[in-house]
Length: 110
Image (cartoon, rainbow, N blue to C red; front, side):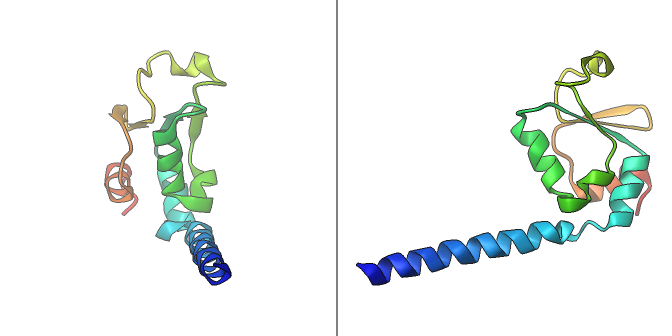
């Protein structure tokens, strides 16, 4: 019984460590790419939105370089936003979680 518990704990610990490594690397999104996307777009999110969190998680630690507007706290900036997450790029709205590749193409950050 103790052997099973030790194996289970080892597996859980391994998953946690692997997840931390992946997130700390920014999931392959460089600081430069995140900065470029952030300078050429706006990301509208809302506190408690799981899809919004998933979108930010795609950038890992480099999400800090995105131009993020949280509609929970800045409602006056979100009057035209009906769904979150929403990206505004070159005056066009893109709702839902977007891939990094699509964002790079839309913003010209290839």
